Length: 182
Figure 1 (cartoon, one colour):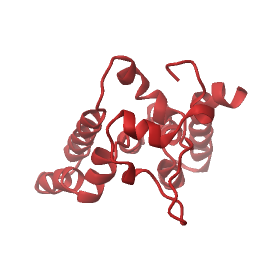
Figure 2 (cartoon, one colour):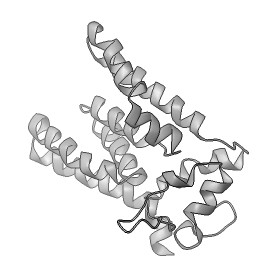
Figure 3 (cartoon, helix red, strand yellow):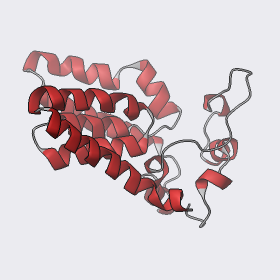
């Protein structure tokens, strides 16, 4: 992207792993054992990190660790006092999360966006925009978004759920629009 090329056409995961000193074994594998080489993630997954790469940050995993700490703080502030240490340990100390997001170099910002969207459930635009950005960042958020909309439906009614769905979809499409047009 920073070189003016389309990541969906010109990206190679193994080259990127080598450039950022990541273990190539952490690159996603197909069932036959070969590694995925093309970029098949939503656009915000690379748009969010592009400024850091442009600034010369060579190891983005420190940023991802910071995002996980912010997530633990944001979510931890919303739970009752006795549960706060457990939330922090669950987010930061979880080996699966640490391996996936910090060691493998996968941006966990989608989780932070989903958490912010869920925590702002009573506010239409901030909540739906955050979930829409999460959907534009990682496919995992695609599985969370229906539950978000069900929560909106349950608390605020079907019309509000439809409004939020439209905002979520429009936000995700707006992020992808330049690549869809291309």
